[in-house]
Structure formats: structure tokens, C-alpha cells
Length: 391
Image (cartoon, rainbow, N blue to C red; front, top):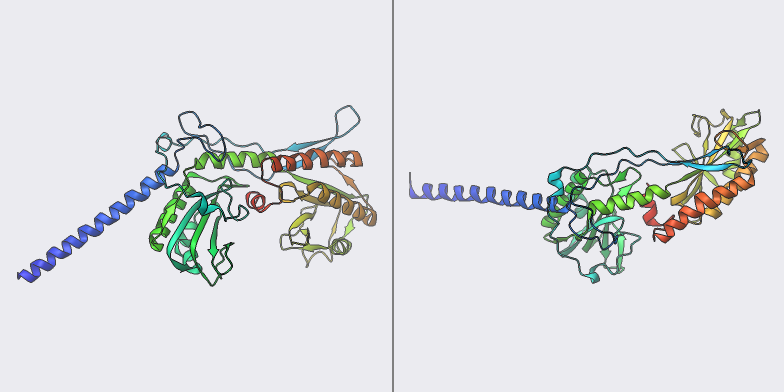
């Protein structure tokens, strides 16, 4: 064997060892990052709460949309409205090993880096935000496609925001955007109506952001917050104010004609969607309230001409609508107009007539109060943050 062959074999061996060593280093770095991300170790300055006692924090079960049921009053001659909330199922605590993981050692972002980022796009209370400052500008389409396959495994939405130099503003990035960005912010949503973000999602997201930073030759700056505790806290608050108000209109004998229902709904500016609901929108194309069939069959353009129904339900999604008291009043007035034309009456879920006194009680207790609590929490009903959380 010649000296040249021996030299080539030696170089090959060195290259193999180098690749293996690099892969091992990358694996170790990502594992440490994921582990440290999940351990609460100090007070959360965003939430202002003390750290939990030593040990793992209990997880929160899935959260589904609650509803309001109107029930007859006990013996005092007036009705009361009772919110019926789905009971949370207990979830086992996280593994002890997870609770012992060290806190994420991440570089704190300078305050100036986030000054111009509107909370309507990304809110530190609502999303876990990763900041990246790129050395060279990179096309939006390349950024969004880089970790797409990995991030599709997440059960919570990921929001992409970049600084557009041409207009000097932060914008939400779309797959058809045709510009480059140097400043990038990526937020993993911490909760929605299915509950708080899971440990698994946090691990996947952290690994994907580190891989993206490696590809873009950038540094991924992650805030040192107690992510799991923050997700649980925001989900707990959302569950307290997550109410949907329904007002039923039932026939007095003759069923409602589908063609009349459609004519009345369209005259009121409501639009029939693919979800089988008529929706009333405001001037900004935001949903205000809905009209659905009280019976099991959904409305559709194909069937509504021939269908009939003995009841309708007007629905208001309280945390997703600003000025909820005013919108509720508009919804009730429309329901009454439907009743006058269709010869129906407003009733509760027990088919007992609804009076103006009862409707006022609903407005005050189950719209004004929860929306007031949201305002005090600085998470206004109908705001972009609320629309993301209550989805």
C-alpha cells in the first residue's frame, strides 16, 4: 500500500470522526436546550407570581367551549342564569426527572429589540417568543419553509413576524410574501380552547428554532420565563371567562320555513357559511354573532329551500367580541324581529319564556362581568390576542 493510499485512508478516518463528533455535539446541545426549557426555577416577572413548591407542576386538561344554560328559578318567582362549565379532567403530574431539569440559560433580549413589536402581533403573555437577528437578509419563503415539516407536529399555532424594512414596520409573515427580512420573531402560542401547550410541543419548538438559527447563521434568543407555568396561568384565566350565550327562538306550532329564515337572515346582513351557520359581521369583517338551527340539521344553500325547523338559536361568543353588551342587545333585537315574523317566542334551554328582566340579567352577569375581567387582565375581549387564545 502506497503512502498516498495510507494518507487518504487517514484523512477519511479523521473526517468520519469529525462528522460523528459534530453530530454528537449538536445532539447534546439540543437535548440540553429542550431540558432546560421545561424547568421553572425563578419568579416569572411577566406574571408576578411566586415559583411553585419543589416538584413538577400539575398539567391542565383540555379545555372545551363552555355554554350558558338558562334554567327555571327556585321558588322566588324570578329566573336565574347558570353557566354550565365542563369539568376538567385531572392529568398526571410530569415526570420527576422533568421537574429536576435546570432553567434555560438563554441570553436575555435587550429591551430595545422588542420596543417596536406590537403586542397585537405577538404578546409575551400569550406566546413564547424567539427572537433572531440575521446577519444577511433572507427571503420570507425560505424562512417559513425551513422547519415546516417539524412544526406541523405541534398542536398549537406558531406565529411568524418579521420587520419589513421597506415600510419600517413589523408584519405577520405569509407564504406568498416576496421580500427579505433581517429581524425575525417567532411565537409559539401558549394556550387555546384545547388547553395549555404541552411539554412535547415546547421541546419540538425549541429544537426547530435552534435548527432554524443554525441554518440562518443567527442566534436564537429565548426569554428566561417559566413557560409551562405561564401557559397554565393564561389557560386558567381563559377558562374563567370563556362563555357562549345562546338565545333560543321556537315555533308556537307551525314550523319555520327555511326560505323565510334565509330571507330574514340575509336582510339582517347575515352570511351563510360552510359551517352551516349564518354569521353577522361588523364593518371590519369580524364575526359578531351567529344563527344556527336548533335542530340537528345544519343550514346549507342546497337544503334550506325545502327544510323547516321548529327552533333557532342566536349565539354570542363572549370573549371574541368587543362591546359585548351592545352586540348582545343587537342580537336580542334581531331575535325578537325573527319571532314577530315567524310567529315564534324566545325561550331558555328548558323551553321557558325569556323575559326582558332575564335578558338584562344575562347581559350584566355573563357578558359585562367577564368582559370587564378581561379588560382588567389587559386582555380585551375581541382583541387580536383574545381571538388567538379563544380559537
